[in-house]
Amino acid sequence: MSKNKVIAENKLPGRTWFNICLFGLVGQIAWNLENMYYNTFMYNTVYEGGTVTGTLSSMTAIRLMVALSAVTAVVTTFIMGNLSDKMNKRKVFISVGYLIWGVITASFGFLTKENIGGLLGLSDTAQIVTATAISIIAMDCIMTFVGSTSNDSAFNAWITDVTTTKNRATAESVLSILPIVATVVVVVLGGMIESLGGYSNFFFILGGFVIFCGIIGLFTLKDSRNGERNPNANYWKDLVYGFRPSVIKENSKLYISLLAVGVYSIAVQIFFPYLLIYLGKLGLKVEDLGQYLTTPVLIAAPFVLIGAGALIVGAGKLIDKIGKKNFVIVASVLFIIGLIMAGFADTLGAFGIAAIPLLTGYALLGIMLNSTVRDYTPEDKVGLFQGIRMIFFVLIPMVVGPAIGDAVCKAAASGVYFENGMEKYEPCAEMFLAAGVVAVLMLIPLVILRKKGIDKKED
Image 1 (spheres, one colour):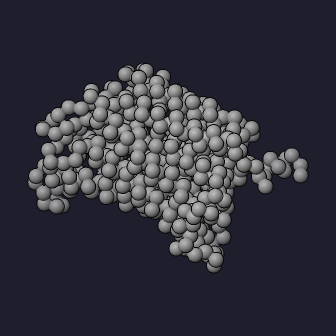
Image 2 (tube, rainbow, N blue to C red; image 1 turned 135 degrees about the vertical axis):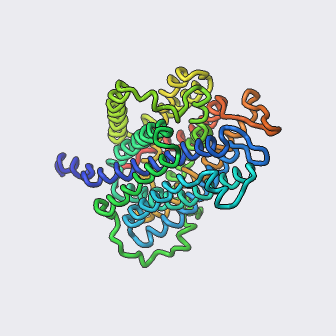
Image 3 (tube, rainbow, N blue to C red; image 1 turned 45 degrees about the horizontal axis):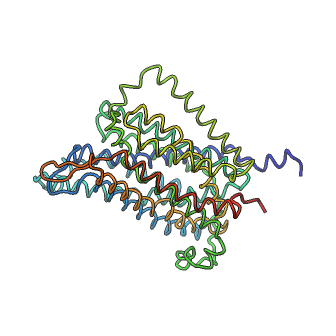
């Protein structure tokens, strides 16, 4: 086989790249909106930054929302990922799913205390706050069901279908850039919340992005499966397939990889749900970011993003070329150092410096861990294993991580005081140190995986 032919076979078609970028970016916009702004939406508009007597604390409500959303995501991915395998198709789950996802995302614009109180005929402040918080949590679970069906189940399985071990880290490097771009989009729009007319219009606009993506996908997305049902698939037995001891033993590298992902994701979730609120304490109010969007900033931003993107994609290509074994421990150490630095950063400037190693390690680990999990996922059961994947990517981290962050901040003496007779506490720097301690544990499965051979070669 000629060198040029090998290179051609390792490249993904332009249409595939378009859909990877489109659905990857818009999906990350939707998830970023949930992970970053549903929390601030709850904190700022429902609780108005304080504690209402007779209700859950704002941080506890956020923790419950994150945990219940995680449970919903995992259950959904088991059910719908397995179903997409049995039906042997991905496109309908992705495109139609994104359409519905956008509609539900936009519907958060109607979840205000005034609307909920009027709908339920409530006049007591505590009852209105409780009912609104519960409504937001419930709607978040509904949105997560649809988002997990289209993105976590179908789109992630489609990515694994269309990539190989020769181009997977490159694809993951592009996918790892998209959350950064999505975060910029969401944060920039979030910084204009007041000028947009409030959270309602903010949700309407971003929900519209997701709807538009689903419509485009109906015409551009090529299914990675032939659509013929698998007659040998037993839907109910397959739901528990990944829990069988024989399957775990047979796919030991996959489960070690998932264990590493789980610990890594717990560390991230200790601080991430509370990050914007914490940055607000340091003086960075996300709702007021619009005032910083000066002409020089807007001109420089695309060049910074392009430069960062080029570095990340370059890292992905290098990982594909020389292997993950040479990078994974270095990336882990950078991530841990960044977390420790963030734990001692008491100003925005110091936090910005800490963010350099933190985000670098975070991005590199994301590329390597995601591509490793895809490498060792059995090709004939890609959709089925998305449920197992979500246990380690979402369920355990999003239940355990925020609970640790909540407990650490509650225990921090400087973060606890009383208001209206109720205890109130806010995100604190110690949550980054707790995340660093957890991240150290990630080195155990990573060292084992390096010894077993983290880099899978094409058969």
